[in-house]
Image (cartoon, rainbow, N blue to C red; front, side, top):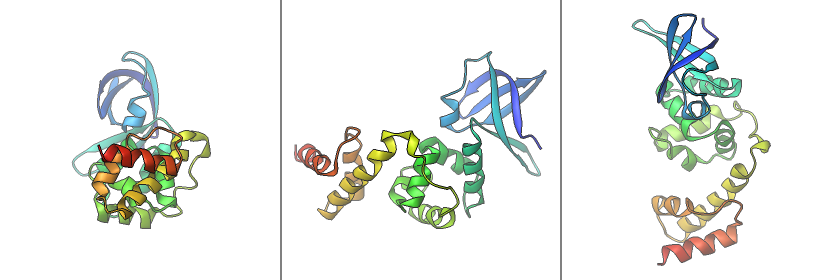
Amino acid sequence: MIGRLVGQLYEKSPPRIGIDVQGIGYEVDVPMSTFCNLPQVGDTVTLLIHMVVREDAQLLYGFATAEERNTFRELIKVTGIGAKIALAVLSGLSVSELALAIQTQQADLLVRVPGIGKKTAQRLLLELKGKLGQPDETTGIVNATLPAQLEVQAALMALGYSEKESAKAIKHLPEGIDVTEGIRQVLKQMNR
């Protein structure tokens, strides 16, 4: 099994990249979180690999960190989640944001990822509970603002706004805002 690749990056076309390792070109699918941190074409790159061997193909999935690869492996163990959906989840949410969503049982965060519906989100929450560890507190303000934004969204839904309307409204809230001020700003914006 291939566990790591170190070589020259020769192609970048999301979500697939090409790595030349001593004359052999490997095509590797990566989440956008890894893709955005890749060096320029022609530079050396190191990726941790998850290899899938099927009857008709040998597929490589690359990750910048062991945490991403481990999360990917946990995701594909969930019933109905394949590699493409797992990559989409890791492209849409950081590992820490996913862990926070699982820990706080916030299905609405998962539903925002393309390919994840309500039933799949509920299945992810159920099957991943306790498997991803604790959210990383060092990621800073993103995780600190998520609960406030979710409280604002819950308040809007309690006031009769749809989930879609409230999710759209909280996207424009500034980082670090408290719940009361967030509700005030969103209501002001929605009443225009």
